[in-house]
Image: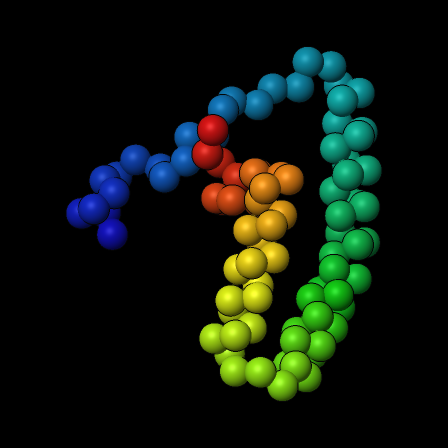
Length: 87
Protein backbone atom coordinates (compact mmCIF):
# COMPACT_ATOMS: atom_id res chain seq x y z
CA UNK A 1 0.00 0.00 0.00
CA UNK A 2 2.87 2.38 0.73
CA UNK A 3 3.99 2.02 -2.89
CA UNK A 4 0.75 3.73 -3.96
CA UNK A 5 0.14 6.17 -1.11
CA UNK A 6 3.65 6.89 0.16
CA UNK A 7 4.89 6.92 3.73
CA UNK A 8 2.97 10.01 4.85
CA UNK A 9 -0.24 9.62 6.86
CA UNK A 10 -3.36 9.42 4.73
CA UNK A 11 -5.02 12.24 6.70
CA UNK A 12 -3.35 15.25 8.23
CA UNK A 13 -4.60 15.80 11.77
CA UNK A 14 -4.30 19.40 12.92
CA UNK A 15 -2.52 19.97 16.23
CA UNK A 16 -4.76 20.07 19.29
CA UNK A 17 -4.11 22.19 22.32
CA UNK A 18 -6.08 22.91 25.47
CA UNK A 19 -6.00 26.59 26.36
CA UNK A 20 -7.20 26.18 29.96
CA UNK A 21 -7.16 23.23 32.35
CA UNK A 22 -10.94 23.28 32.81
CA UNK A 23 -11.43 22.42 29.13
CA UNK A 24 -10.66 18.77 29.86
CA UNK A 25 -13.98 18.45 31.73
CA UNK A 26 -16.31 18.71 28.72
CA UNK A 27 -14.12 16.26 26.79
CA UNK A 28 -14.26 13.84 29.70
CA UNK A 29 -18.06 14.10 29.82
CA UNK A 30 -18.25 13.63 26.05
CA UNK A 31 -16.11 10.50 26.24
CA UNK A 32 -18.14 9.05 29.11
CA UNK A 33 -21.41 9.81 27.33
CA UNK A 34 -20.21 8.23 24.10
CA UNK A 35 -19.04 5.17 26.02
CA UNK A 36 -22.42 4.81 27.72
CA UNK A 37 -24.32 5.19 24.44
CA UNK A 38 -22.09 2.82 22.45
CA UNK A 39 -23.92 -0.42 23.45
CA UNK A 40 -27.25 1.09 22.43
CA UNK A 41 -25.79 2.10 19.09
CA UNK A 42 -24.58 -1.47 18.51
CA UNK A 43 -28.05 -2.78 19.39
CA UNK A 44 -29.59 -0.36 16.91
CA UNK A 45 -27.21 -1.57 14.18
CA UNK A 46 -27.99 -5.22 14.89
CA UNK A 47 -31.73 -4.56 14.91
CA UNK A 48 -31.61 -2.80 11.55
CA UNK A 49 -29.53 -5.66 10.14
CA UNK A 50 -32.21 -8.11 11.29
CA UNK A 51 -34.96 -6.00 9.74
CA UNK A 52 -33.08 -5.77 6.45
CA UNK A 53 -32.56 -9.54 6.53
CA UNK A 54 -36.31 -10.09 6.71
CA UNK A 55 -36.96 -8.21 3.47
CA UNK A 56 -37.72 -10.76 0.77
CA UNK A 57 -35.69 -9.25 -2.07
CA UNK A 58 -32.41 -10.08 -3.78
CA UNK A 59 -29.28 -8.49 -2.34
CA UNK A 60 -28.75 -6.28 -5.38
CA UNK A 61 -32.24 -4.79 -4.97
CA UNK A 62 -31.56 -4.04 -1.30
CA UNK A 63 -28.27 -2.39 -2.25
CA UNK A 64 -29.97 -0.27 -4.92
CA UNK A 65 -32.63 0.88 -2.46
CA UNK A 66 -29.94 1.72 0.09
CA UNK A 67 -28.04 3.71 -2.52
CA UNK A 68 -31.19 5.61 -3.45
CA UNK A 69 -31.83 6.45 0.20
CA UNK A 70 -28.27 7.72 0.72
CA UNK A 71 -28.49 9.65 -2.56
CA UNK A 72 -31.70 11.31 -1.43
CA UNK A 73 -30.08 12.18 1.90
CA UNK A 74 -27.09 13.61 0.04
CA UNK A 75 -29.32 16.09 -1.74
CA UNK A 76 -30.32 17.57 1.62
CA UNK A 77 -27.07 16.88 3.50
CA UNK A 78 -24.04 16.56 1.19
CA UNK A 79 -21.80 15.65 4.14
CA UNK A 80 -23.12 12.06 4.02
CA UNK A 81 -20.95 11.59 0.93
CA UNK A 82 -17.29 10.77 1.47
CA UNK A 83 -15.53 9.84 4.67
CA UNK A 84 -15.82 13.09 6.59
CA UNK A 85 -12.32 14.35 5.91
CA UNK A 86 -12.91 15.91 2.49
CA UNK A 87 -13.41 19.65 2.13
